[in-house]
Image 1 (cartoon, helix red, strand yellow):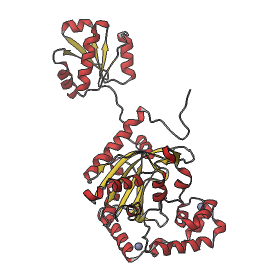
Image 2 (cartoon, protein in one colour; image 1 turned 90 degrees about the vertical axis):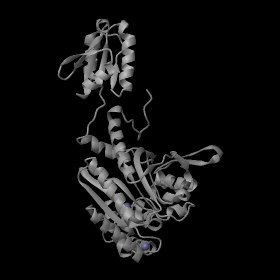
Image 3 (tube, rainbow, N blue to C red; image 1 turned 45 degrees about the horizontal axis):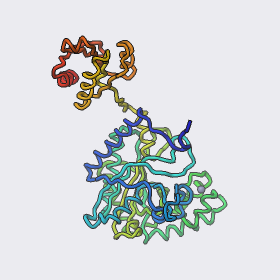
Image 4 (spheres, protein in one colour; image 1 turned 180 degrees about the horizontal axis):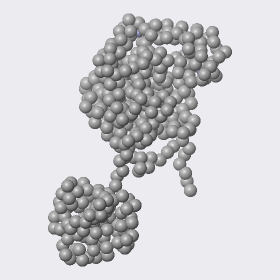
Length: 418
Ligand SMILES: [Zn+2]
Ligand SMILES: [Zn+2]
């Protein structure tokens, strides 16, 4: 037997309804905030991610699935969506139609991380990006939209972590202060952080190794280095969140994994799985569009981790199984054509219908109807067809009603609605 690849998973029918439920809720909510969908390829040139995410990140250094395509071109399975959305915004000149674009996309991402429980190398995200708006109100509105989304899904123990990462004017001084702080404590840093400390010292801030945590404890904080404009922006985000009653915690260690973020960075966490877990994260990336060859346009976005969200929603109250409204128990070969026609007509009318063509006995068919949790069974034998009426049996109440064959779809529709 050929098995699936380690670190990958199948999403089976008893789970897919929850996926669709979550996705549909996101789509409906995001659309009412002005978002439109964009669908992008899952492969891009490797250099798109090298340039946007940054060379000295775990993702680019060791987690990307990159292979050689035709003409020696390096091709990468996308490890995240933002770079692709920005590439498309630039390449398709979306900014020329209208600089302000609000886009969302849903799909798989790929990272070669160490496989562990609940973590997959193909994982799914809902991403949303806003281009062309520099105002701090959009930062707050995105966080508000996310908060509303998780509340509607019934996720408990929500919290917002908030930080500002500054801008090219104020961040260098902070990076320098951080570097020299780290240099004085190199002995306590883990191997990864020793490597990061010069090229990407901010990454040390979210290292989970205990000895690194100690070093970070008294490290300088970005908020003490923000320039006036960044400080004003950050204050405005906080007061707008306050206006909407969204509670947040300032977290100077929140740096996000990727190089391209500037100013607002945020994470939505839940404690519903015991420990604190991030279920969405995002931030502003005002420099990225220009850096990738587009016009200078501010941007902000977020990603929701769907895999974790699905397990949270599935363990919660939401449970919706797709079971048949009608199961047609067709008895005997001579009922085959009529019941085939009816099953098609019922399904087209929006009634979930299942029919068994096996020609088994009524007893066996009732057994199967039970197994698949059919709400009603339509019992059809040649006698019923001759008499012009069939029997509809409610499986829960055992109640039976006679349905005339003439205009049957409408009769059944009415009966199910009552
Ligand atoms: Zn600044
Ligand atoms: Zn470390």
